[in-house]
Amino acid sequence: MSRQIQRYTEGERTNHWMVAILFVLAALSGLALFHPSMFWLANLFGGGPWTRILHPFIGVAMFLFFLVTMLRFWGHNRLDANDRKWLAGWRDVLANREDRVPEQGRYNAGQKAMFWLMVICMWVLLVTGIMFWRAYFGDYFPVGVIRAASLLHAIAATVLIIGIIIHVYAAIWTKGSIGAMVRGTVSEAWAKKHHAAWYRQVNR
Amino acid sequence: MSMQSSLDIQARSATTTPSASVRRTAEVAKLIDESKCIGCKACQVACMEWNDLRDEVGHNVGVYDNPQDLSPNSWTLMRFAEVEDKESNLSWLIRKDGCMHCADPGCLKACPAPGAIVQYSNGIVDFKQENCIGCGNCVSGCPFDIPRISAKDKKAYKCTLCSDRVSVGLEPACVKTCPTGAITFGDKPEMLQYAQLRVGELKERGYSDAGVYDPAGVGGTHVMYVLRHSSKPEAYSGLPKDPQISPMVSLWKGAFKPLALLGMGAAILAGFFHYVRVGPNTVEEDEKSKEAA
Image 1: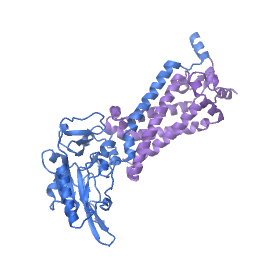
Image 2: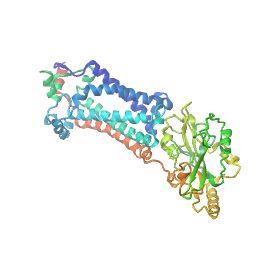
Image 3: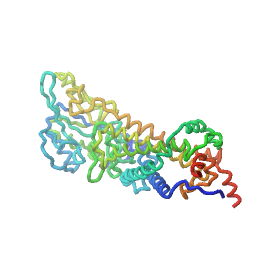
Image 4: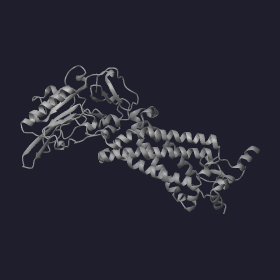
């Protein structure tokens, strides 16, 4: 087996999985309140009123942990000219012909785009969610703002959920990735194949 | 708050299949003739008495409105507006505010809790507090700003149109008590007929702008007004001129809901079939070393 390279520290892994767990809880409780066909999910949280009570607290906790993730990884996710070329070659990437697209640093352009998508969605979810958190903030916003916030909250949540489905699938599809977030390491060969520029950087 | 039979439910919140609909009851309506109202608040008292509710005693802030606003304990409220016309004639417009029992109820559309809001086939829109989860979406959905969330139990409350009384053939408590006959109740077509009669009488008396308030934007209502100034409903303490469910709410609780679920389902399927067709993205060196081990 080839040499292992550290990709994520203990802190980064813990942080990631806290966000992940809270995301699952927020998404399930949110879906319960979103579509009648999903209302049965409210049973997981102790029924309708408990789902309504818990959802915003779960959401705020998710946001806070995400905020740490966001600050940790902000610098690694700046898009550059190379990324545009990578994105233009998305068909090759999906067809397992990664050799045809430019080599990537710590994150490829797809991962970076996902990062920014998550950042935008998380902020929209936080701000709009607070606007119609009736128990504490409902009285501070006019009804027109609350209606717009409710719609935007649902849209941002849908975009984030679809984004996370893609994020999870990408991890399952790209073998050797899950270990990076579970044990913190990737193989040297994995780094060379998927993130050649980053590999050279860590080996300098 | 209702004892009506589940046979008479024609729409139920957060429910995508039809409710029991073999039996149809006649559509009812309450007609409030603003020109006959003297602002005595007997309707408010009757509402409290029948529903056994007592609001907190507030403070006089210099207007006749008492309490200041609708609340979980006050399901109807006389709103007093002093309006001056161009010739400086003062008129005192008094409107009995409360749930309008829309044919297309925004509260019911916005509600995420199955069966927390129901609409009976007679047109009454009722909140079932035992199913209410306290989210307040009904408040966002309502074009008339009617539902109120209780601080005690976080449940939503509003006028039931005395669905319990109506279901056993009685008129609503406010109707029974009104000393001037300003509030009447019956089958909706008959109430509309009577309203037109009253409009005619008012026009004869010089109220050329008299008309019926049964706004089409919400499919008509089961609480209607006869207004002396029907082209300016806003003058009656902000009665909306053309109320309708906000497009934000319609999109949020309409087309977007199934599309969002479809999108999530499609993303999962796309991933699965990508794996089936293209296969995993493996690192050859790692695969070999796995085999060797």
